[in-house]
Figure 1 (cartoon, rainbow, N blue to C red):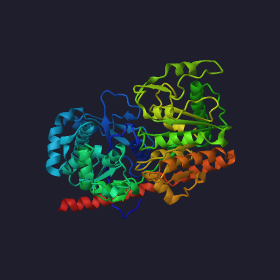
Figure 2: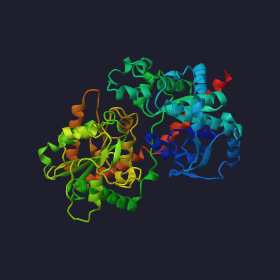
Figure 3: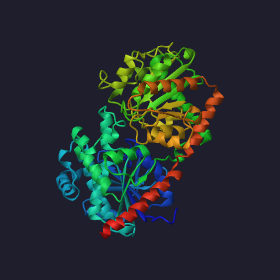
Figure 4: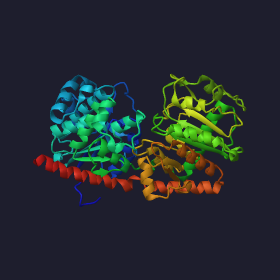
Length: 556
């Protein structure tokens, strides 16, 4: 640790995704936890949401003895909390707070945020109320912890770190109730930037011409944008995850981040050599077995190239459309007629049920499976007729005929290990892939390509992803030989990107096994450059800046 920096004696980190696995921020926090635990043993405490209906949470183990004196005080103060360990490497302390009682106090909160900070909550809708109720409860937890001196530290020795607009109200409230606490705010993606892209408006060519406040009115995003912007300006240290998102913050939030804090990965998530090979084999078998049950084709595991994209269902932002288009261009190539590419879209959608005919085919003892109707999807959806992925696959003529060298399968479920199809978590399938493709349009960081190379799976991404920009700075990303290929993407060059992906896939499947293994090995080496051991120093810098600015703020 750099002794020249001011070091916290207690870190309180708040996120909607503490012990709540719903997106990329969960990966950020859960993989960073061990590194912080190594530095600040049990002086890093995560605060996340508790849900009364979800009494059994496999990500959380309640420990009755942890912070026991404080829990009694918290109960007297009306706080409903559970204290325990987050079941990730490092096993950090986690406080889960039931925020259901705070919905009735939101008018009080919104009035205070308007009066003190000018946050415009009057136009709130959707998940804004839920986020702010959680924020209000989290701020009360922080206030109670410090008032009861839970770690025998002074407030001026504490850093409170808040992630995303969903915790913005907690930061603002903490500055009011505990003004000496140093606050850090990290935006992992600006709400207005994501909305601009989600509404199919070009972001990058016009970024300098956009006014964030004006766009918030146009896109009905006033409350979220207002809360995020005011939090960014009020925080003692404002951070974001990449250079490309820093530009977005400067233009749309009128605030240049104090520090860029890239997202690292914890190597403990990756199995060691012997277990790695066994898990890779199991993953390939699982993916191929499902494909065989759908298409009726017996795939040769050694000769079939397994490719996938994954992430949130953001059809354009995540580049899902270009992944499918690239596969269509690949299957038109004459030199792949004797090859077999098995591709997957591993993206959660509006699922109704796993297909009964597929489950029946899987359970069948017959050596030769019969192809099912519509063999391009594993589940029935509630919106089969209007689903973007399914419609694009059908429009391009993907039918997974046995003679087709490119098969594409949509797996529209969240891979949490509890589905009835694979019963495997995402990482337990990722490890079996040969390649991943993430042709992102809007991607402030891009955990999926980083996770991919960490598991020794070469990846293709774009320079509109924060990870892609970082990779360009540290690796040779012009070809897949480095394990990472970064393709140039703009607002308008979709055809060129699809062609480039198709060419990369074509080149890869024509390599011999030795060269493919070399690329996998290089991907693993590249991933070492992005583990938390390299990136945690940015957080230590952020804490130091927060302490300095908090001290000046209090003295005013």
